Amino acid sequence: MTIVSCMNATITYVSPDLVFPRSNRKAVLLDSAPPVLIPAYHKAGWFRKEIFTQWFKHFICSVRLSKNDPVIPALGDRYPHSRNIEVIDCARENGVHIFCLSPHSTHYLQLLNVFFLEPLKTYYAQEMEMWI
Image (cartoon, helix red, strand yellow):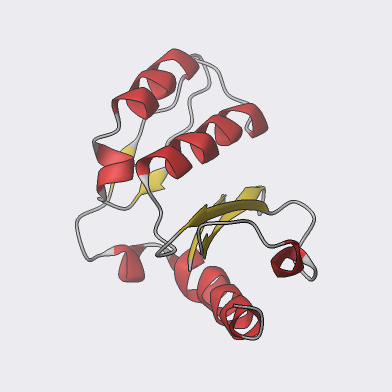
């Protein structure tokens, strides 16, 4: 299972995207999920290019931004983030300056992963095991 989320220092956040490890939707997986959760499905639960592009477009709509007041999200150095031409073009058009972290450093540099996402992922992974 993969979770993508975005939060800033003022605790403003964009709805998380939770990628379930399955090919088809199963409504019971969302029974105890927050209503703002954006579900996605991939047979291995991976965060693929299409899923990130969908989430990034949601990010653009959710965050107040402009070319005069840009946003700089810190992203992991993964293919869906750093080499996705559709996302890069969308970012340029909307005043988003993408900053990619060094490989294998997000667990040190993105405290959101440690204090928020990892406990959330652990909780939903335990719940999901009952329904897969």
